[in-house]
Image (cartoon, helix red, strand yellow):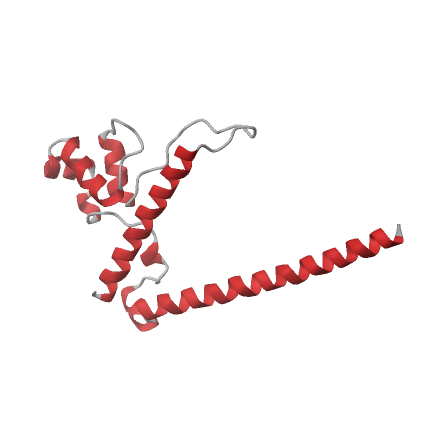
Length: 156
């Protein structure tokens, strides 16, 4: 029993050391990301604009806020089809086959499609390849949008 206890103690010590290395690595990566953001938007510009560099990466509306109301969108696009085409070009296909004006308006305001409201999978069900592909497509679309915004901020 003593040998088992010693082996368990050694295992826990190795795990603690690995965890410490992991947290140091994550901390270093966070510092690098913060430095990159500070280069994109230096602190003096941040104070002048009243926004943090992290806030620049959060989803933003695709049009100015006053143009993202349902009334303004209907005046601009007339029907859902052209508004939907505009959104598909920018953020990808919609989560539903026939999106309503409410869904389109929400997508314009948030800069991304709202998450699907589907019944939760049970613990025993598995993720299908189609689920993974859809998730990958959404993530890639958001990354591309962030890259565009960062490049626009840099003036490139």
